[in-house]
Structures are given as C-alpha cells and as structure tokens.
Length: 372
Image (cartoon, rainbow, N blue to C red; front, side, top):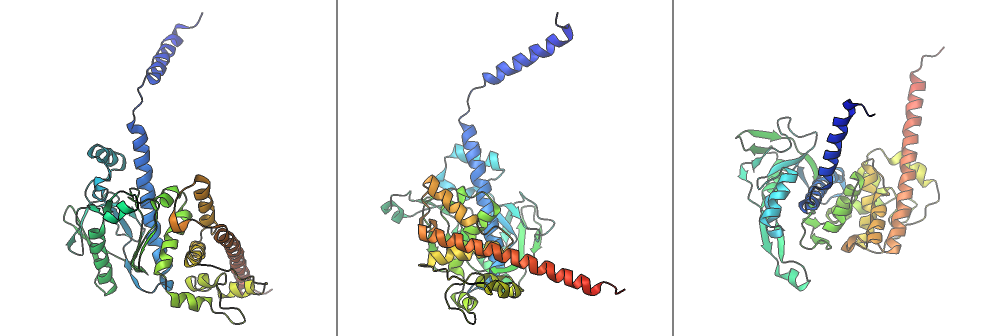
C-alpha cells in the first residue's frame, strides 16, 4: 500500500500538470519573443557601430567625438506598429516614448544607468520620434511609412561637433540632473539599422554622412563580431580613400589591396608582424568593386578589435542559406572567395603577432634575469 504521506504531493502534481496542459495558447507570446529579439539586436548593433567608429578613427575622412551610450525610444517605431503592439513592446523591453539609456560603455558617467530617461543633450531637448512618408518607397513596392529618427540625430550630431570643438558633452536626466559625458574620437557620420525598417532588404548610403544596414542582415546577426562586421561594412563608406591608399603602399609590392595594410594603420605597432608576414609569398587579393573592398575592410576592423575575421563571410553564408535579401551585403561567389582568403590571412597575422609579442616578452625576461 502506498504511504499516505505521498498521496497528497502526487495529487497536487497531477492537478498542476493538468492545469498546465489546459493553459490556452496566447498569440502574444510569439510577438513578445519577436519584440524582445528585435530590440536586443538593434541595441547590440548600435553599440557595435559606436565601438567600430572609435576603432576605425585613423581611417576616416572626418572624425568627431562620440558618446559612450545608446539612447532608444519607442516613439521611433511610430506607425509601424498598432497601439496594442506598442504597449506590448514596451512591456517586453521596458522602453516607452521617452529617450532611455539602452546601452552603456564603461566610459559612461557612473551616475548614468540603464533605463534612465534623458531629456536633453547639450541643453537641446530631444524630440519625440515618429514616422515620415516616403512616396519613393511605393515605386519600389515597399511601405511608405519609415522611422523618422532624423530630429534625434540632428541633436546628437550637433552635440558631437561641439564636443570636438572642446565643449564638454552633457546630458540632462528627467529628474533635472545634468551629467558631464567623456566622449571618444571616432569616425564622423552614422551607421544605422532598425528592427522595423520599412525596406528591410535595402542598403542605403547617404554620401559620407550616413549608411543604413538592411534590417534583414542585422536581425540575422548573432555574435558581437557579426554585429561589428556589419557596422564596419557601413563605416567603410565613411573611410578615407587617402588613408586607405596610404595604408596600401609598401616597398617592393604592388599598389593593389594587400592583406594587413589597413590593419597596420588601425593598430599601431603591428609593423614588425607585417614584416614577418611579408617574407612569405604574397598572392594579391583582387577586389572588383567598392563593396568588395568594404568586405575586406570589415574583416580587418573586426580583427583589429581582437575578434574573429571569419565572422563576416560566415554570416553571409547564412544569408544565402536562408535566402535573405540583404542588397549590397550579399556576396557573389568571387567576393565570398576573396573574403575567405583574406580572413585566413588575418588569422595567420593574428597568430604571428601573438608569437612576436610572446617572443619579445620572453627576451625581456631573459635580459632582466640576474646572471649567475
């Protein structure tokens, strides 16, 4: 006979399992997951864009001071979602129509925290987000309603310019406090992406001022290096042709794109490693277009930041497998072959640099060791 002490717990367990099995399906659960994912990846991308801009500073035509935080507002989605979905999005992410801190770098003020509401930057009030109508999108078969965050960027870009001129950047919080922000020099312009892009398959370049990465590409990215690769791809179009041309120059070598040259410009002290690498037979990596150069530039920036230079082409292979439309980011077989070859060269370069540094440290320890 089963002990009476076990009957009640077993009965309660059966009741609980029965209740769970009868729980009705909530269609909003799927939306919650979609909203959470889109928000997290957009914030990851925007953080990566800031970090890449800092790292690629030496390669850009124009530089500015860049803030160590990301602000995000539900208002930027505007008419892309219904009122009910906007409310659900806010519940999932903790965001609302105010500009809240969504990401912080370690260089941000200690008094600034995730979720804080920022009302003004350098004394200028941050505008409410919204939508604008782009009739040209209708001709391309896309929704005419696009996210209108341009007023926000106008405030931020002015504050960046003022910081470059020597005026400290400040943020005003909802409680009235004003905090001074230490900025860092990086590439001018902006590389953006949004989870609610009205043309999610389109890459847009507005001169050297702004580049928009397709939402399809951003939402497929997973790792930190993949987000950085996408941000670096867009940053290439703000990069300095003069700096890149100078980085390509090398004695006894052709003036074509040669692996490691941009990395050498971005990472001071890499020259001794390049010398070791250049003793090997070099095979020129040909690039047939500006987007092909952007692939390799992105590989090198990721590598210079200590990441995996294969992240870009692996991400691109997923685009192809899933049949995602990503416009200029989609690599042809020729571009993909170049990107793979280039990434392998960078991995060898990273290994050579690590060995050179280890050998130098060992030699220094040997010199400092007391003689017997």
